[in-house]
Length: 441
Image 1 (spheres, rainbow, N blue to C red):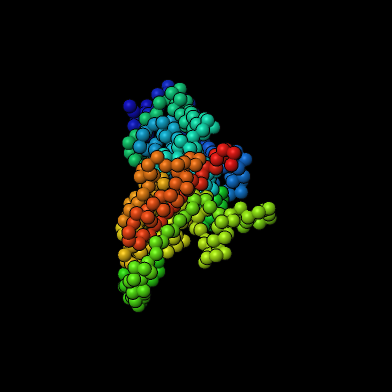
Image 2: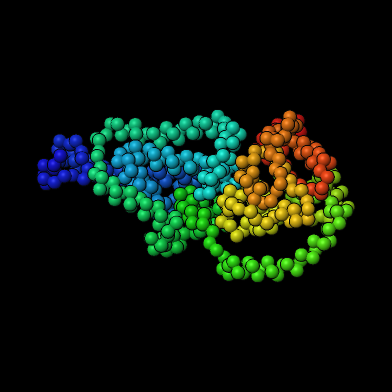
């Protein structure tokens, strides 16, 4: 079809009968493309923040973050449009993807106080397993509303003139979209490091503030480069070898435990959500809420450990306890078990193994959660007892009771002739925390 005014093939094929109508359609398309990122941005931030006022405050107080997010969402839409060639269908796909991501981030914030991270997409099994717990009438209704709003462009597009975009222009759109997204994620130098030039705060040590100031889209994008962990300054194979040599002098300590009588069974318990309520400032108790533990503290060596996690991410606490390696050197919000352990590494299990101990891990939940089945093997455990290996266990609330785990610990110690190191993580007190979870208690 040739353009009757110029004699050339048009970029967009429009079934129009007059020049004036074609002009207004072009103007409408320009406005359409200009307003799309604004509509996507508004929808994402309203869902993520839980209110229209929250999205409005962000837009007013962080204009540079808004502009960067505008470029990002325009790039995502252009990419989708270049692939499909249909404006309304592309908008529906883009909106559904972004709005559902915002919905997941909102629920993650409510449940554990953290927004959506790029590495969360490696936790699909955990997300599916938690669906029955978080699914309720309100969540289902919100999901239906999001799907309906995302479908509006397709429904409206049925009444608009059909547009065919030439393949060469679609290729340009895909390239422009990829360029916009990569320049704000993995390769900031492509845009002359727009984030730094606009002095957008990269608060990757406190993600709630990071996402609050930059918005979900830009906050997520700025975290993309944190998926890749850079080699620390001064790190090398030779440097590590020299450190190993300096530690070999401690080999003589093994002789101390050569006598089997000096090798007691060792049980290390990480008790889910257990804490000392008397540490709350401004709160007084008529009597000690944890008298038995207090008695043990007074009679034996005791102290406090600082947890690297709050409200979620149990596996990172395990990682620090078992390896002695701080997660502070990893991207904030990442999960060592899922992302970084893919081969054998030294741990408490391997240390006790050197002394002739049997090494066992116990956690009464699914073995694939946090990739524990594979990770415990890499950490040197001989046996891992997950929920699948508990037969007719006692439950308290949603999960296997701490009493059941205690009984299992005693059973394993009694039936094992050689000294045993058992690392146990309980599950009973894991969230969600709801009224009447334990009945009258």
